[in-house]
Length: 102
Length: 132
Image (cartoon, rainbow over all chains, first blue to last red; front, side, top):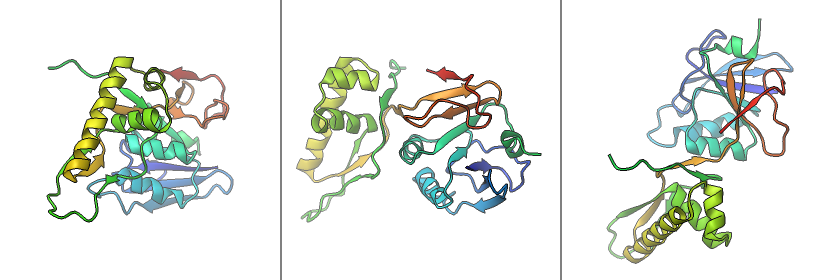
């Protein structure tokens, strides 16, 4: 399973970003290979549709889950259609804490 | 402040932004803003041919509300057709009809896939609560 998360900085100890489309850095974690990577979002400063374009961009990484503080209405619709589950942390957890990694 | 509108639930947002007329003689570039719930009302009543009562139950609003939303949609589309305006499908007072659940162990809210069993994606626990 592949988890993606909107982050504040490119480390495992980053908190999850409260925004999705306007987020610059995403973390990707593969539960099978245990690989962690960080990617830059080229669409973070679009005037409109940042969420939709970011969501499409993440699809290339074959994600199964996406973690962020909030998703816009069109983004929610997009992820529902692509069968990607959305996760919203309630407690300011970091990427490491949410995935329960050491 | 006017009475706050109750959120209208839609199944999904359209995956395009709107319509533009082509071959326009005097291009005035006027714009009509079709709300997401109005698009949904047209989809349910004119495309899926549901009754307005059925549409109301799916949108989680009253039947008179659907009538008003639908009438507004028809009027806006008619205006765009007569005045050769661009139709932008955005805005309004809608939200996606998603099933959100909560896992108290992981302190997260999450959406579930249709047809899939409802369990926490992080800890696989089945002790989750549905959020209204």
